[in-house]
Amino acid sequence: MPELLKKVAALWLVALVITPFTAPFSTLMKLIGSVVRPDKLEQVKAALERLHVVGMMVAEVHDHWPQDHGTTVWKGHEYKLGFSTKMAIELVVHDDDVQDVVKVIINSARTGHVGDGFVSVVPIEHRYNIRNGERDVS
Image (cartoon, rainbow, N blue to C red; front, side, top):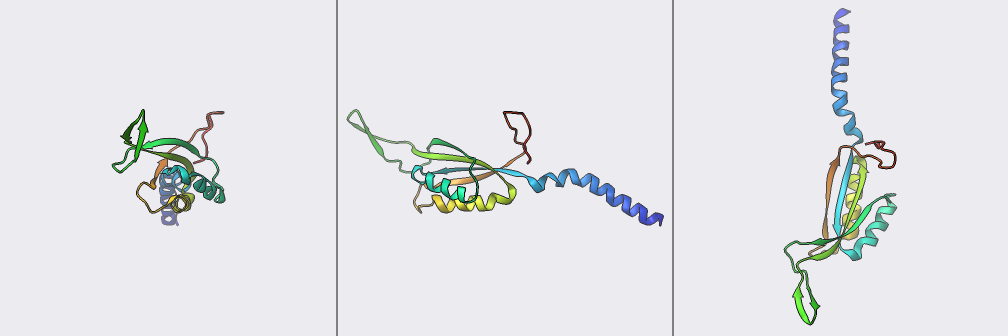
């Protein structure tokens, strides 16, 4: 019997040591960042709303990738643009929702042409509510 108690105690000890490292990983959150064409923004937002993802940050950005960005005329002179106007979308989702959200963004933003944009996923360690300073569940 004492041998069995030692084994049980050892298993509990292992569980106590491992749990702090594994438990948070089951509820991790990710920051999904995407850059899409401005004319695709409403389609992406509508597709995300169908997934019940409504909280997001959207900003106009300038894309400086090495590609043809077109020209503009200013004061009678034609200039090559060194950038394209794009829309940046950022949202935070739980780990379980990442694949669905990424798939929806890609499918709704794709035109099949150069300059469609990209999606990136970054882990979020913590997220805090500014209003009350509380740490959101992550």
